[in-house]
Image (cartoon, rainbow, N blue to C red; front, side, top):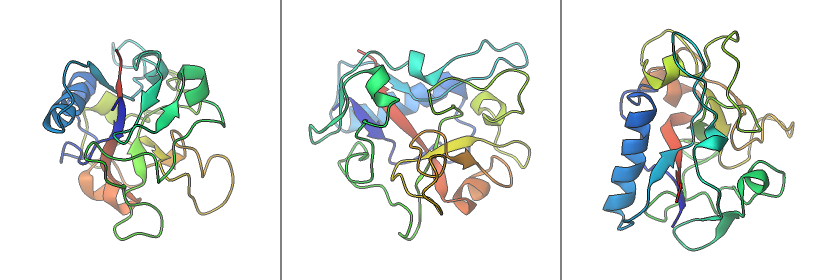
Length: 194
């Protein structure tokens, strides 16, 4: 296993404790699932705001290839991951326990995965509105987070609606309730960086 969707989030909305806290969540869940000896990174971007350095999600996850817990290849490398030929979908984007994550049409829908990224895995510019809930430190009514749809399903067949890493912004803030209200649960993608 070198890729999974977290079976749970922080429980505090989009406040993951920044990148360090998100990486720790990935590391903890992978360890509990029996994956040791790997360095796990959350697929999250950081905007260069409020003194923070810009971080692109695509630059922090290693070089690939990545496989799910059942050994199915998700992508061969970073370019493949960010192309139309990747293998991220409802059947393959499993959690660390090998379970399918509920998607559009399921109850509850949990297909909104936090990324804060553009489709190419690059962070939004510092001058853009905050789309990372304060670089993953906010859980209140203020702010939004860009999410992707792991099941590649949306209300339309437009590319934005079916993007695994950049579908839309959360509505109503960064709280757990707001994330659930738009079809998510504060879940993140985790990649083995080595």
